[in-house]
Length: 368
Ligand code: IPM
Ligand code: MG
Image 1 (cartoon, rainbow, N blue to C red):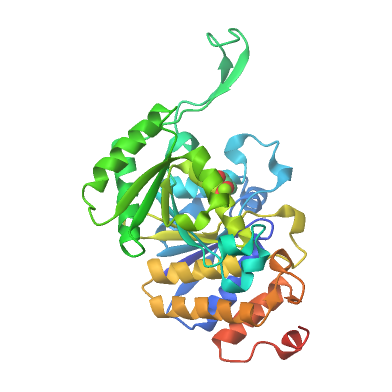
Image 2: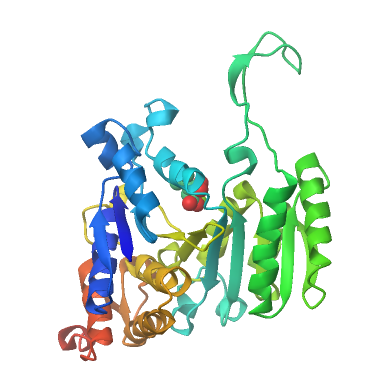
């Protein structure tokens, strides 16, 4: 079994380093190989997703990904920008199912910007379609308008589209996931305005016929955005398209205290997957050793569970994360009065200590 490790840019390298230490301490029979991706690959090879990186990702059984992007590449043509690396990996590897669990750990109830009683015990799963929608729809581009409000003016356009099989397969993922949880799916659309999402709603409703044991409801995306901050615990599994899922998953992240806590899995039809934190490369704090590595460490747990058949080790990692939180250790993003602020490295140290049965670094805990 081989794991491709793609740290990327910004805090990507720092958080992936901690996740790799956690992986290594488990002493599992895996090989790993690291490659450049994103801005780092552009600097070295002139392309954010070099052939060699793509080939490594294709050959691997699972991929651990950090983050890509930096404002300094904003003026590059789109095809060379770091974000194209992650979009290209999703597309070339057929990673159509993005699972983003938003779990509010008891220890972090007070780190959320929402009232504790709204988020305590929160456990929702956002399933985002990842290879279609307006993200990938053709045609797209810039041109001179021939109609619309300003004929003759310069305009830009993208295409929102979904085919029946694309919707069917993500709907199956959602209903099957719901069967392992509380058997409720909310499909998020904008059927009141968009043809694409009326079709989405119709197809999800059809697929639902095969899952009579699962309850399905539909919600417009604007309402879903509101309900997520009003009564998030009413949701269980949410399934939606690529763009709505991008937006709602960032919103859901804040319910858990910090986007620094949210892991994700992007799976193909055989459950081969790319695992990454849901957050980005955060160039503003890169290199300072303050980023939260827990989303990436929890992504390793998802990788072990979904792609590498090591559920027991996945449980161990999740328990270790709980233990460090219980011990009061917090990176800056989740720090609050009365807890111990630690660096990226110290957080990694603590998870490793919890996994190896050592008491979590004394000098840190005594600072509480
Ligand atoms: C995400 C990110 C990406 C996306 C960017 C980096 C292209 O925001 O994974 O949510 O929009 O999908
Ligand atoms: Mg996003």
